[in-house]
Amino acid sequence: MNRMRKKLVLLLPILFWLTTAYAQKTAVIGKPNEENQKIELADEYFRRGDFEKAAENYESLIKDQAMLPKVHKRYVQCLVALKKDKQLERYLEKTVKRNKGVPDYALDLANFYKNQKNDIEASKVFNALVKEIYTNEPLTEKTANALLDAGQMDWAEVLLTESRRALGKPLAYVDLVSSIYRAKGNITMLLDEMLMYAGTDRNNLYFVQQMLQQNLRTPEDMKALERILISRMQGPANSPIYTDLLYWLAVQQKDFTSAFMQARALDRRDKMQGAKIMEVGYVALQNKSYAEAATAFDYVAENYKESGNYFTARKQALLARELTLKNEFPVNKPAFRALVTEFTKLINETNNKPQVHDAMRSVALIYSQYLNNTDSAEIWLNEVINHPRADRALADRCKIELADILLSKEIFWEATLLYSQVEKSQKETPIGHEAKLRNAKLSYYKGEFQLAVEHLDVLKIATSREISNDAMDLALMINDNTVFDTTGVALKAYSKAELLLIQNRQDQALAKLDSLEKAIVDKSLTDEIYWLRAKIFKSRRQWQPTLDNYKRLIESYSEGLYGDDALYFSALIYEEELGEKEKAMELYTDFLKKHPGSIYLVEVRKRFRKLRGDEVN
Image 1: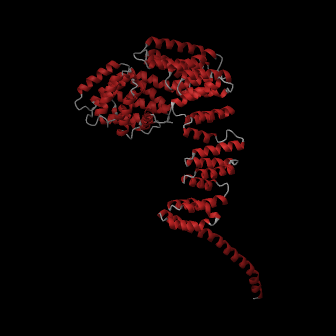
Image 2: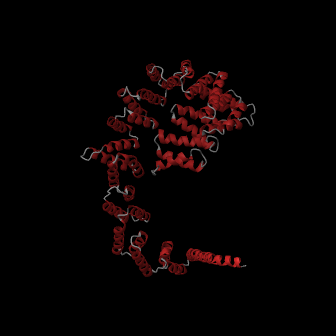
Image 3: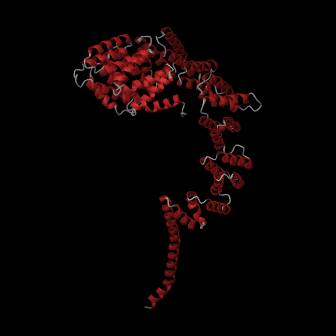
């Protein structure tokens, strides 16, 4: 018993300490809970619109300095709603005095005076705040952002300017200051700001280009920058960075002649062995400015013969000329023959290096597609295919093109063998999927529609959207035209017309389509006939008959397989080929109404906004 009593005596102080600690902890936890409940009650009144009761509850809370940040904004809103201007003024003045250098409270007081048309007092409060925070860079930046969000651009500009002066950093907050100039429409000051920042360090170039891209929204803005850059380059404050910016600006404007001139200067300055000029050539190619691309590549080939860019430049110059010829109709066979001669010279100069195989493929395609010399095309393709050092993907691409030639000659067995080899070699790749699609089309051209559909069903889940869509479209067309005509007589005739097109016998294909249109009674293939006719005329750049066939599709088969295609490509022709922007906008508007689920939707929206003059990134 004594031992038990002794243990209890020893335990009592410990129990007392634990009990006291728990009570203190409960009290500490309990206080915030009580305050949170008060805030929730006040907020509930606020949400209900009972600003009188909300204000009473907030007033009891703001006496505690720790609670002030949590309830300040809503308390101010309550007093504004209740129109208690005097009470609000006293509260804000008192709060600002107690919280020197806290921007939120000072800005609320300054805004209060501004709303009261008391600009003198508003300026006093704001200027006092500036002096309190302008040496604190993070706080200044945060405050300037808040001012911009509130639409107070002038105050934000004053704050940032004063902070720059006080910190001795004339280029601090460059992005914020630039956005202010842009919002005010002061392009001259914006450009001065950007160029001053760019001139201090070439590492700033990318940032400056990004800022200019975001802020220069009109051709006039671009021209203003060009004038300033040229003026500065001619003056004492010239900086190497201005040449970089002139080059960048020319590329943005797709002025590849000017870009070429600036690229030459940059290339000489930085000893880039033609790399910058090559860049101009590639961008010009992407933008279908083939003549300018050829000029750039020719310059590199002529002036940097010992550089690693020499062979590529010559090959790309020939490619640019090839693309120019491909867009001409009728086919300029003498020009294509001259191009083959130039390609052959280049191939012979390279001592059979692996990179020559792409040029050999180009020669083969010219022979097969433009000179009707499939025998020569086969020789060149086989040379690439059988070369031990040829890139495997390129060799497989050549196999597909060789199979296309065999298909055009109706040597179906050898063609399908080559397609199948590529399918196996390039499993689950775009090239492999394309070979499988060609194999399906081969079955279709032979009139083996069931076999074609089996191939196409597999391709519906192909990774390439284009191949998947082509597979679905062809499968749908076959199914639609063999439901009632199980023998597929009309479809076989149509597929023969497509085969004539592959054989480059366009006039015969058109004649076949005309006779088929007259022969079919149920009009089941009429939309396909219009579509194929349009395709032939488009390849010839005969825009009016192309548009006539598209128009028939739009008017009679708007909900059919080619309805959205016909409308989209019609708009493209009016926009890009005929230069009739208003007509293109009309068709794009029609497209947006009729085909909201089309794969072209995003591109149509972008083109429509651009034609309308909207800013498009």
